[in-house]
Image (tube, rainbow, N blue to C red):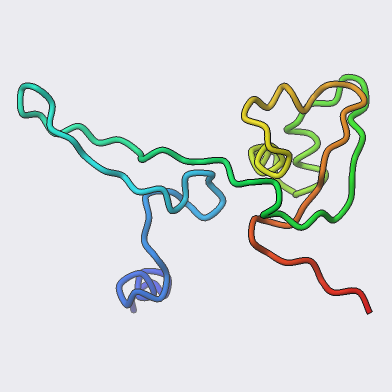
Length: 119
């Protein structure tokens, strides 16, 4: 019996990429160029940080003294390696910028996921 995930890849139901869905590089294409000696060189196309308006804010969190972004990501998102999602949502490239004591962080839904409508 075939692995069901492999069947979904083969049928095109799930897009096959070089990076898992939780990676910041998921969906970024790998392209190649020819070097001067004819060697093929693979690289990732540039990834642009999405605009903060592409995120629905759930709440704010104020950074306490000594807090690290990976600990905040673990507490807020459930994955310490997802710190980059906090960077994207707050319009920041360098993670250490978000570790400043007193900084207000936007805790958001993933990019493009709308917030639930209030009733």
